[in-house]
Length: 327
Ligand code: ATP
Ligand code: MG
Image 1 (spheres, rainbow, N blue to C red):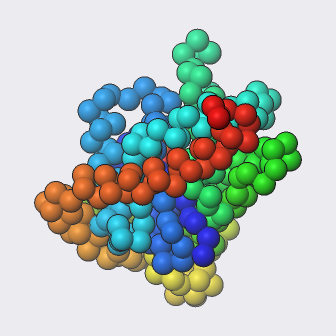
Image 2: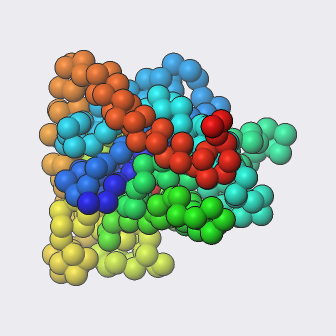
């Protein structure tokens, strides 16, 4: 069985996009191979963040992982910063990725677009280097992510090819896996933009009360067409709501179109809100239980122990391959 790896940055409150595009898929794959799910706290430092916010968000993601049904006996849940090999490997791998390809990364372009050059940290630019280290450390072939992270996984693949061509069969080739539906949930207020936890416009937060979630869905931007139809170009808002409904209910776009044929957007939005609230109500209750149980720190330290075992082996292999060893 192939190893599986993914992570989430503790940059803000988790959104419905993170839940549908990432967490829900983690729960499915944990039975299919050893799964490494890290909380990417080092990545969260690439943009300014308050220390207590970073700390609290990190534990919170672990609690949400558990609430979603991730089983710490099957999935290793840990903090990236608890495994020093991530940083050590990134220092080596940075020599095999180039300025040109890093500057073409969409995430870098998006996140640095509104910043003055003097304020853009090297870490934001070098983000894909650390991410490549995250991926290859666990010999993971399968990388379940949302669509926006595919470009970074592709770069990690280029790096593995480059590295193995030079040094032999040292690193395992990873591959991104995205959900058929829901790999890119859009903002409810601007459905041409991805829902992102660090950009609060049009987000549904997993922390939101169900009533707030309902209101947000009822006031989601739609269009003047007046027909429930999957057409992301001309009806991005409606298509996004259909995507949310489909990924949580399992209904196909065809089925949803038929069900709401001749009905207004009000009825449709109410049904979407029902689906979202039905899914999130038990999930939110489990999250509260996890927080009360005080289990998070124990899970994180057990996860880090196992992660360190595997990561150190890979790091040693890489060090040896490039000539960094004493005897
Ligand atoms: P940030 O704004 O800090 O980049 P984010 O919401 O984009 O936050 P990440 O930590 O970058 O979240 O990504 C965690 C995982 O969630 C990744 O697999 C990513 O592809 C996925 N993801 C993020 N946003 C969405 C979305 N809108 N739809 C589907 N998947 C998403
Ligand atoms: Mg992101």
